[in-house]
Length: 100
Image (cartoon, rainbow, N blue to C red; front, side):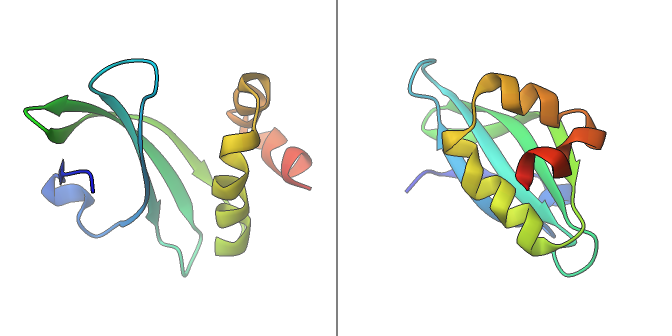
């Protein structure tokens, strides 16, 4: 299991996935869920591995969804998503067009 030093301000969020980069050594992405029972947000954070512990470096992107089911569909779709799809989804007006 990967070790992560989670800042206090992120402790109220749900860890959905932690991905270690297969290309860049000591780099990872943390995917967090916020307000999953209300208007859910999926937040991406850049991680750096320092002495076998991942440290949060910065927030990369936030996606807001109509439901937690939509949010989890998005997360489940990530491994199959092309870079172009992700770039288009970063424009919030496109996210529902791509997911459905």
